Length: 310
Picture (tube, rainbow, N blue to C red):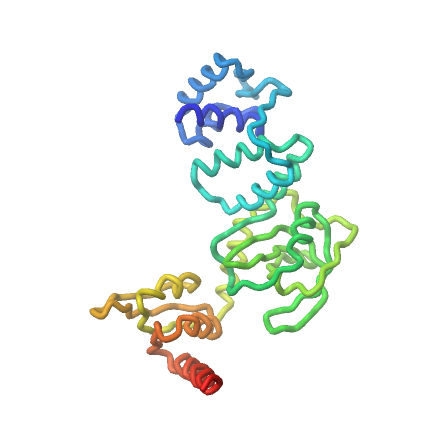
């Protein structure tokens, strides 16, 4: 609708300052000519929008002009921006985020923009299931404020060690929060649930002023998966568990629906424990055909469980 597009232009100019027509057109996915017509309509409606021609020119609002469209507090708007960092790529979502940004008072806008850059929400992650993350609120603060921390951290083997970290950003992925941080100049990913204790140091974190959290996390994720000993499982799965079974696998190599409605599939997991955990969760709805090591471990678990409750 044109009314929504006109409002979006005002929000963009209010948040970004001077923009050229091509930039606005790209943001709103319309033509430059449409943007210029909309600017004329805004001016006719009494909105103090101006166009400067020539080098360094562009479209801008009268200095000091603001429109408040929501009753959001600065903290509420910051929380929304942080949760919205998952890059939900729809025009409606982008429009909503522009309105959220416009609602933030000038004094708090820098902190809110930092939150949206330093906190990322993704639908996928390194592993699952969900675990307690008691230090998350404090980590959110140090990520936004840019402070160095000292943590006691448990690795995948359960060993505890002390580490001094420069927080870069937080990522929510696959039902987990992850801290992207540098240690002695080397950037790594730390699962928040494995942090036993946390101390905030009174010194700034050594980090870049700008970060592409999406790209950084994707690179670490790819490296993590490549480091694991992947395993292929041949199985027969009932349709009722197919979606949940394949949600967090590395990939489905092949699958074919049989006459009985079940799927004969070859699925790649990130490792032995990942495969056993996912398949055990499905119970008798999945029958593993190969490899025998996975069949044997599932059988041992089933026997031990039956003996416990017999």
